[in-house]
Figure (cartoon, rainbow, N blue to C red):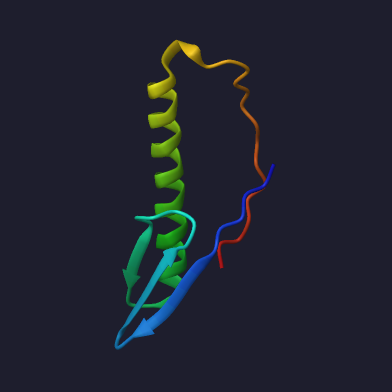
Length: 77
């Protein structure tokens, strides 16, 4: 299973700003486009991991059929 996310990126003055449409709260600001791409990727991974841990904690012992699956890494932008 591969997930794809949509990054919205724009330049505002001397700054590059961007966010991930599908995940509220994943937004970043950097001086260069390349830095912004890296920061968005790291922030997205952190948000997904936090959400995963939060969901597992909420489910407690009731989790059934959980399997670790490897995902193909997609370029963010």
